[in-house]
Image (cartoon, rainbow, N blue to C red; front, side, top):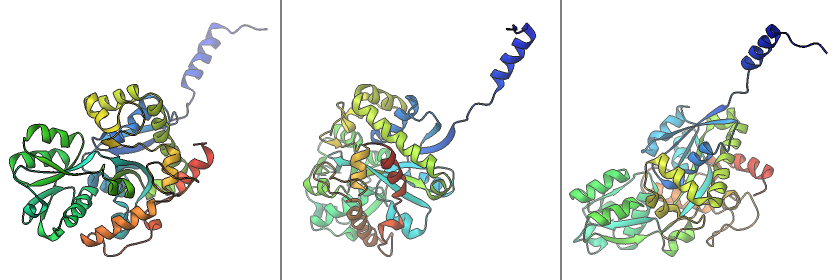
Length: 346
Protein backbone atom coordinates (compact mmCIF):
# COMPACT_ATOMS: atom_id res chain seq x y z
CA UNK A 1 0.00 0.00 0.00
CA UNK A 2 1.29 3.41 -0.97
CA UNK A 3 1.62 5.99 1.77
CA UNK A 4 0.20 9.47 1.28
CA UNK A 5 2.85 12.09 0.72
CA UNK A 6 2.74 15.13 3.00
CA UNK A 7 1.46 17.21 0.09
CA UNK A 8 -1.38 14.80 -0.72
CA UNK A 9 -2.25 14.53 2.96
CA UNK A 10 -2.45 18.31 3.27
CA UNK A 11 -4.67 18.51 0.19
CA UNK A 12 -6.98 15.83 1.62
CA UNK A 13 -7.33 17.73 4.90
CA UNK A 14 -8.23 20.91 3.00
CA UNK A 15 -10.81 19.09 0.89
CA UNK A 16 -12.43 17.50 3.93
CA UNK A 17 -12.51 20.76 5.87
CA UNK A 18 -14.12 22.63 2.99
CA UNK A 19 -16.61 19.91 2.03
CA UNK A 20 -20.17 21.23 2.19
CA UNK A 21 -22.17 20.31 5.26
CA UNK A 22 -25.92 20.21 5.36
CA UNK A 23 -27.10 23.65 6.48
CA UNK A 24 -29.78 23.90 9.11
CA UNK A 25 -33.12 25.21 7.90
CA UNK A 26 -34.17 28.37 9.71
CA UNK A 27 -37.55 28.62 11.39
CA UNK A 28 -38.42 32.08 12.73
CA UNK A 29 -40.38 31.80 15.98
CA UNK A 30 -41.90 34.50 18.19
CA UNK A 31 -43.35 34.48 21.68
CA UNK A 32 -43.88 36.92 24.52
CA UNK A 33 -42.57 36.79 28.07
CA UNK A 34 -44.60 33.90 29.40
CA UNK A 35 -43.27 30.65 30.88
CA UNK A 36 -45.83 28.62 28.94
CA UNK A 37 -44.04 29.47 25.69
CA UNK A 38 -40.51 28.86 26.96
CA UNK A 39 -40.35 25.31 25.62
CA UNK A 40 -39.01 26.71 22.36
CA UNK A 41 -35.85 27.70 24.25
CA UNK A 42 -35.53 24.15 25.58
CA UNK A 43 -35.79 22.83 22.03
CA UNK A 44 -33.05 25.20 20.95
CA UNK A 45 -30.64 24.75 23.87
CA UNK A 46 -30.98 20.96 23.99
CA UNK A 47 -30.70 20.78 20.18
CA UNK A 48 -33.89 18.75 19.92
CA UNK A 49 -34.24 19.70 16.25
CA UNK A 50 -30.67 19.24 14.93
CA UNK A 51 -31.73 20.03 11.37
CA UNK A 52 -33.42 23.31 12.29
CA UNK A 53 -32.13 26.72 13.31
CA UNK A 54 -34.78 27.99 15.69
CA UNK A 55 -34.51 31.77 15.48
CA UNK A 56 -36.54 32.82 18.52
CA UNK A 57 -37.69 36.41 19.06
CA UNK A 58 -39.42 37.77 22.15
CA UNK A 59 -42.15 40.17 20.99
CA UNK A 60 -44.46 41.36 23.75
CA UNK A 61 -47.39 42.44 21.56
CA UNK A 62 -48.93 39.36 19.90
CA UNK A 63 -50.52 41.49 17.19
CA UNK A 64 -47.04 42.63 16.17
CA UNK A 65 -46.09 38.97 15.79
CA UNK A 66 -49.19 38.29 13.71
CA UNK A 67 -48.41 41.26 11.45
CA UNK A 68 -44.86 39.99 10.92
CA UNK A 69 -46.19 36.53 10.20
CA UNK A 70 -48.68 37.86 7.67
CA UNK A 71 -45.79 39.67 5.98
CA UNK A 72 -43.82 36.42 5.78
CA UNK A 73 -41.16 37.51 8.27
CA UNK A 74 -42.19 35.01 10.96
CA UNK A 75 -43.05 31.34 10.55
CA UNK A 76 -44.38 30.29 13.97
CA UNK A 77 -45.83 32.15 16.95
CA UNK A 78 -46.90 30.99 20.38
CA UNK A 79 -49.71 33.11 21.75
CA UNK A 80 -53.14 32.86 23.34
CA UNK A 81 -55.52 30.65 21.43
CA UNK A 82 -58.36 32.96 20.41
CA UNK A 83 -56.94 34.71 17.32
CA UNK A 84 -57.97 32.09 14.74
CA UNK A 85 -61.52 33.36 14.09
CA UNK A 86 -60.28 36.95 13.70
CA UNK A 87 -57.55 35.92 11.25
CA UNK A 88 -59.99 33.81 9.25
CA UNK A 89 -62.62 36.55 9.04
CA UNK A 90 -60.10 39.19 8.01
CA UNK A 91 -58.42 36.89 5.50
CA UNK A 92 -55.08 37.11 7.31
CA UNK A 93 -52.78 34.25 6.20
CA UNK A 94 -52.24 32.84 9.72
CA UNK A 95 -53.54 29.52 10.99
CA UNK A 96 -53.85 27.93 14.40
CA UNK A 97 -52.11 24.54 14.30
CA UNK A 98 -52.16 23.35 17.93
CA UNK A 99 -53.75 24.02 21.30
CA UNK A 100 -50.86 23.79 23.76
CA UNK A 101 -52.15 24.38 27.30
CA UNK A 102 -55.30 25.32 29.20
CA UNK A 103 -55.25 27.72 32.12
CA UNK A 104 -55.76 26.09 35.51
CA UNK A 105 -55.98 29.15 37.72
CA UNK A 106 -53.19 31.36 36.37
CA UNK A 107 -55.62 34.00 35.02
CA UNK A 108 -57.27 36.48 37.37
CA UNK A 109 -59.56 39.47 37.23
CA UNK A 110 -58.47 41.99 39.87
CA UNK A 111 -60.28 45.14 40.98
CA UNK A 112 -58.94 48.20 42.74
CA UNK A 113 -59.65 48.94 46.41
CA UNK A 114 -63.12 50.39 46.79
CA UNK A 115 -64.66 48.34 43.96
CA UNK A 116 -67.14 46.16 45.82
CA UNK A 117 -69.00 44.62 42.90
CA UNK A 118 -69.15 44.56 39.11
CA UNK A 119 -71.78 47.29 39.33
CA UNK A 120 -69.11 49.67 40.59
CA UNK A 121 -67.32 49.31 37.24
CA UNK A 122 -70.15 50.83 35.21
CA UNK A 123 -68.68 53.81 33.36
CA UNK A 124 -65.16 52.85 34.46
CA UNK A 125 -62.05 51.88 32.48
CA UNK A 126 -60.94 48.24 32.58
CA UNK A 127 -57.69 46.92 31.14
CA UNK A 128 -57.58 43.96 28.77
CA UNK A 129 -55.74 42.91 25.66
CA UNK A 130 -58.34 43.83 23.05
CA UNK A 131 -58.82 40.98 20.62
CA UNK A 132 -57.36 38.63 23.23
CA UNK A 133 -58.75 36.11 25.67
CA UNK A 134 -58.47 38.62 28.51
CA UNK A 135 -61.21 40.68 26.84
CA UNK A 136 -63.53 37.65 26.60
CA UNK A 137 -62.76 36.63 30.20
CA UNK A 138 -63.63 40.13 31.39
CA UNK A 139 -66.73 40.30 29.19
CA UNK A 140 -68.16 37.01 30.46
CA UNK A 141 -67.46 37.93 34.09
CA UNK A 142 -69.09 41.34 33.72
CA UNK A 143 -72.23 39.99 32.08
CA UNK A 144 -72.50 37.11 34.56
CA UNK A 145 -72.56 39.82 37.22
CA UNK A 146 -75.16 42.04 35.58
CA UNK A 147 -72.97 44.53 33.69
CA UNK A 148 -73.14 44.76 29.92
CA UNK A 149 -69.88 44.98 27.97
CA UNK A 150 -70.96 48.35 26.59
CA UNK A 151 -71.25 49.77 30.12
CA UNK A 152 -67.47 49.83 30.65
CA UNK A 153 -64.59 51.25 28.63
CA UNK A 154 -62.08 48.62 27.56
CA UNK A 155 -58.48 49.85 27.51
CA UNK A 156 -55.98 47.89 25.42
CA UNK A 157 -52.85 47.24 27.53
CA UNK A 158 -50.17 44.55 27.69
CA UNK A 159 -49.50 43.07 31.14
CA UNK A 160 -46.68 45.37 32.27
CA UNK A 161 -48.68 48.44 31.33
CA UNK A 162 -51.84 47.09 32.95
CA UNK A 163 -50.03 46.73 36.27
CA UNK A 164 -48.89 50.35 36.02
CA UNK A 165 -52.36 51.53 35.04
CA UNK A 166 -53.91 49.84 38.08
CA UNK A 167 -51.29 51.24 40.45
CA UNK A 168 -51.74 54.76 39.06
CA UNK A 169 -55.52 54.61 39.18
CA UNK A 170 -56.00 54.89 35.41
CA UNK A 171 -58.10 51.72 35.34
CA UNK A 172 -60.47 50.28 37.92
CA UNK A 173 -60.04 46.59 37.02
CA UNK A 174 -57.88 44.40 34.83
CA UNK A 175 -57.28 40.81 33.78
CA UNK A 176 -53.84 39.43 34.58
CA UNK A 177 -51.99 36.18 34.23
CA UNK A 178 -49.18 35.22 36.55
CA UNK A 179 -46.75 36.43 37.64
CA UNK A 180 -48.28 39.86 36.91
CA UNK A 181 -51.36 39.29 39.08
CA UNK A 182 -49.24 38.50 42.13
CA UNK A 183 -47.00 41.50 41.46
CA UNK A 184 -50.02 43.79 41.50
CA UNK A 185 -51.53 42.24 44.64
CA UNK A 186 -48.21 42.58 46.49
CA UNK A 187 -48.02 46.28 45.60
CA UNK A 188 -51.66 47.32 45.98
CA UNK A 189 -53.10 46.59 49.43
CA UNK A 190 -56.85 46.22 49.23
CA UNK A 191 -56.96 45.06 45.62
CA UNK A 192 -59.13 41.95 45.25
CA UNK A 193 -59.31 38.91 42.98
CA UNK A 194 -62.92 38.55 41.84
CA UNK A 195 -62.54 35.70 39.32
CA UNK A 196 -59.92 33.10 38.44
CA UNK A 197 -59.52 30.47 35.76
CA UNK A 198 -59.54 27.77 38.46
CA UNK A 199 -63.35 27.97 38.41
CA UNK A 200 -65.22 25.10 36.77
CA UNK A 201 -66.53 27.06 33.79
CA UNK A 202 -63.08 28.07 32.61
CA UNK A 203 -61.61 24.61 33.10
CA UNK A 204 -64.57 22.88 31.41
CA UNK A 205 -64.51 25.15 28.36
CA UNK A 206 -60.69 25.42 28.17
CA UNK A 207 -61.47 28.91 26.89
CA UNK A 208 -58.37 30.42 28.48
CA UNK A 209 -55.28 28.81 27.00
CA UNK A 210 -52.42 29.00 24.55
CA UNK A 211 -51.84 27.86 21.01
CA UNK A 212 -49.33 27.59 18.23
CA UNK A 213 -49.79 29.53 14.99
CA UNK A 214 -48.04 29.22 11.65
CA UNK A 215 -48.08 31.43 8.59
CA UNK A 216 -49.83 30.03 5.54
CA UNK A 217 -46.84 30.75 3.32
CA UNK A 218 -44.64 28.70 5.64
CA UNK A 219 -47.20 25.90 5.83
CA UNK A 220 -47.60 25.65 2.07
CA UNK A 221 -43.98 26.20 1.11
CA UNK A 222 -42.38 24.06 3.81
CA UNK A 223 -44.89 21.47 5.12
CA UNK A 224 -42.13 19.12 6.26
CA UNK A 225 -40.25 21.92 8.02
CA UNK A 226 -43.49 22.97 9.72
CA UNK A 227 -43.98 19.42 10.99
CA UNK A 228 -40.43 19.23 12.31
CA UNK A 229 -40.87 22.58 14.07
CA UNK A 230 -43.98 21.33 15.83
CA UNK A 231 -42.14 18.14 16.76
CA UNK A 232 -39.31 20.21 18.25
CA UNK A 233 -41.82 22.00 20.49
CA UNK A 234 -43.47 18.80 21.75
CA UNK A 235 -40.09 17.09 22.16
CA UNK A 236 -39.17 20.03 24.40
CA UNK A 237 -42.35 19.51 26.41
CA UNK A 238 -41.40 15.84 26.84
CA UNK A 239 -37.91 16.88 27.97
CA UNK A 240 -39.39 19.32 30.50
CA UNK A 241 -41.80 16.74 31.88
CA UNK A 242 -38.85 14.42 32.52
CA UNK A 243 -36.46 17.19 33.66
CA UNK A 244 -38.60 20.02 35.08
CA UNK A 245 -35.83 21.60 37.17
CA UNK A 246 -33.38 21.90 34.26
CA UNK A 247 -36.16 22.91 31.88
CA UNK A 248 -37.36 25.66 34.20
CA UNK A 249 -33.83 27.03 34.48
CA UNK A 250 -33.57 27.25 30.70
CA UNK A 251 -36.93 29.01 30.46
CA UNK A 252 -36.17 31.45 33.27
CA UNK A 253 -32.76 32.36 31.89
CA UNK A 254 -33.98 33.01 28.36
CA UNK A 255 -37.05 34.99 29.40
CA UNK A 256 -35.26 36.97 32.10
CA UNK A 257 -37.57 35.66 34.82
CA UNK A 258 -36.95 34.41 38.32
CA UNK A 259 -37.26 30.66 38.82
CA UNK A 260 -40.11 31.32 41.25
CA UNK A 261 -42.06 33.16 38.55
CA UNK A 262 -41.65 30.24 36.16
CA UNK A 263 -42.67 27.70 38.79
CA UNK A 264 -45.70 29.82 39.67
CA UNK A 265 -47.01 29.23 36.15
CA UNK A 266 -45.84 25.76 35.08
CA UNK A 267 -44.80 24.20 38.39
CA UNK A 268 -41.69 22.16 39.13
CA UNK A 269 -42.93 18.60 38.78
CA UNK A 270 -43.84 18.27 35.11
CA UNK A 271 -47.50 17.82 36.08
CA UNK A 272 -50.56 20.09 36.22
CA UNK A 273 -49.89 23.17 38.33
CA UNK A 274 -52.84 24.19 40.53
CA UNK A 275 -53.16 27.93 40.10
CA UNK A 276 -51.05 27.69 36.95
CA UNK A 277 -51.48 25.89 33.63
CA UNK A 278 -51.54 22.33 32.35
CA UNK A 279 -48.94 21.73 29.65
CA UNK A 280 -50.30 19.48 26.91
CA UNK A 281 -47.98 16.84 25.56
CA UNK A 282 -48.41 15.78 21.93
CA UNK A 283 -51.03 13.12 22.64
CA UNK A 284 -53.11 15.45 24.82
CA UNK A 285 -53.01 18.23 22.26
CA UNK A 286 -53.84 15.83 19.42
CA UNK A 287 -56.88 14.59 21.33
CA UNK A 288 -58.07 18.14 22.01
CA UNK A 289 -57.65 18.81 18.28
CA UNK A 290 -59.59 15.63 17.44
CA UNK A 291 -56.69 13.90 15.72
CA UNK A 292 -56.07 11.01 18.13
CA UNK A 293 -58.49 8.67 19.86
CA UNK A 294 -59.24 9.22 23.53
CA UNK A 295 -60.07 12.21 25.69
CA UNK A 296 -57.71 14.96 26.84
CA UNK A 297 -57.11 15.49 30.58
CA UNK A 298 -59.07 17.71 32.99
CA UNK A 299 -62.43 16.34 31.83
CA UNK A 300 -62.07 17.87 28.36
CA UNK A 301 -63.43 16.14 25.28
CA UNK A 302 -61.97 14.84 22.05
CA UNK A 303 -62.09 17.48 19.32
CA UNK A 304 -63.06 20.23 21.79
CA UNK A 305 -61.15 22.77 19.71
CA UNK A 306 -64.32 23.07 17.60
CA UNK A 307 -66.40 24.11 20.60
CA UNK A 308 -63.63 26.53 21.57
CA UNK A 309 -63.73 28.03 18.08
CA UNK A 310 -67.51 28.50 18.26
CA UNK A 311 -67.37 30.15 21.69
CA UNK A 312 -64.59 32.60 20.81
CA UNK A 313 -66.28 33.40 17.49
CA UNK A 314 -69.52 34.18 19.31
CA UNK A 315 -67.75 36.68 21.56
CA UNK A 316 -65.78 38.26 18.73
CA UNK A 317 -69.09 38.88 16.98
CA UNK A 318 -70.40 40.54 20.13
CA UNK A 319 -67.30 42.72 20.37
CA UNK A 320 -67.61 43.61 16.68
CA UNK A 321 -64.28 42.07 15.67
CA UNK A 322 -65.87 39.60 13.23
CA UNK A 323 -69.08 39.81 11.27
CA UNK A 324 -69.81 36.11 11.07
CA UNK A 325 -68.79 32.77 12.53
CA UNK A 326 -66.84 30.70 10.02
CA UNK A 327 -66.12 26.99 10.08
CA UNK A 328 -63.03 25.97 12.11
CA UNK A 329 -61.27 24.86 8.92
CA UNK A 330 -61.21 28.50 7.83
CA UNK A 331 -58.68 29.30 10.54
CA UNK A 332 -57.27 25.99 11.77
CA UNK A 333 -54.81 23.79 9.89
CA UNK A 334 -54.99 20.22 11.17
CA UNK A 335 -52.54 18.76 8.65
CA UNK A 336 -49.32 19.62 10.53
CA UNK A 337 -50.28 17.75 13.67
CA UNK A 338 -51.90 15.00 11.64
CA UNK A 339 -48.58 14.32 9.92
CA UNK A 340 -46.78 14.42 13.23
CA UNK A 341 -49.02 11.96 15.08
CA UNK A 342 -48.75 9.45 12.23
CA UNK A 343 -44.95 9.33 12.54
CA UNK A 344 -44.46 9.78 16.30
CA UNK A 345 -45.91 7.37 18.85
CA UNK A 346 -47.36 9.81 21.45
